[in-house]
Amino acid sequence: MKELSLNILDVAENSVKAGASLTQILLTEKDNVLTIEIVDDGCGMDEDVVRSVTDPFYTTRTTRKVGMGIPLLKLACEQTEGQLTIESTTIEEDPTAHGTHVTATFNMDHIDFMPLGDVSSSVLTLIQGHPDTDFLFRHEKDGQVVELDTRQLREVLEDVPLNSYDVLEWIREYLREQYEALS
Amino acid sequence: MKVKDLLGHGFEALSLPDGDREIDGVYIGDLLSWVMGRAQMDNAWITIMNNVNVVAVASLADTSCVILAEGVAMTDELKETAEAKDVNVLGSADPIFETAVRLAGLIG
Image (cartoon, rainbow over all chains, first blue to last red; front, side, top):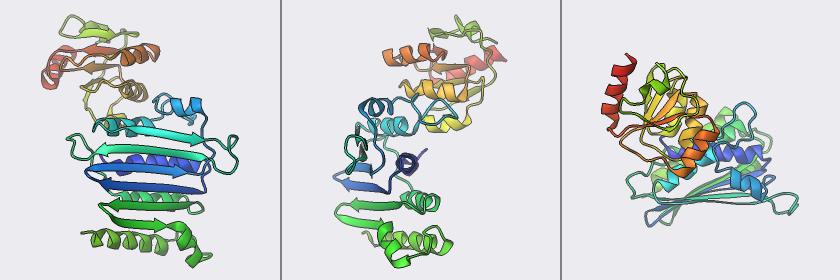
């Protein structure tokens, strides 16, 4: 992963696996600091699990004994003297407001800062793989905003699946236009 | 050549739970996610990274040993985890290229 967009994809996949109906991917670039937040309303994690997800030997997968999503994101931000925090509320603790909030900050002028890469493609990959859950993507860059909310698309599209070719192409173009409009 | 046979040839043992492992080939890299998908089983892996994720990548790729080049120190966390997960870690005071050349001379 030479780009942060792949780390984002990896962590957002965890949200979907946690049963999230809405996963938010929020990027903010301000004063040379990039903040990446991945917020979901999934089943949440208790304190012990939150502590162990930064341990590379923790994984919910059964096929291998190592889970690298969060450890690599943590490494990537700490290399720029940023930090990673995780807050989580389990469904047992709060049946109405549960989920996980991952926040990673990066100093973009640090020499070890990895480029963000193609976040639009990561968002498209998520929608393509999980057309029945919702994603809110928001990238704020020095006050200007690129945004996509699948809940709004769903209202307009009604029964058309979000992962149909035409819809995905439309989303790709929609994001591209918004990025082009950023000065 | 076994991992333990490197000792005394400019390589020192930092964690050596399984010195009898055979070395087959060498991989060099510091971007862990990259190494994860490319290092081959039984490779000796030369890197300058010393955070705990190194042990996880070595374990995933099933390398025969990690070689910390440039005299990079072992952190306590790395040492504990390497020993707990049976991952061999050696140290070399030389830069990566010189370390690789020396290793190539030894493993033939």
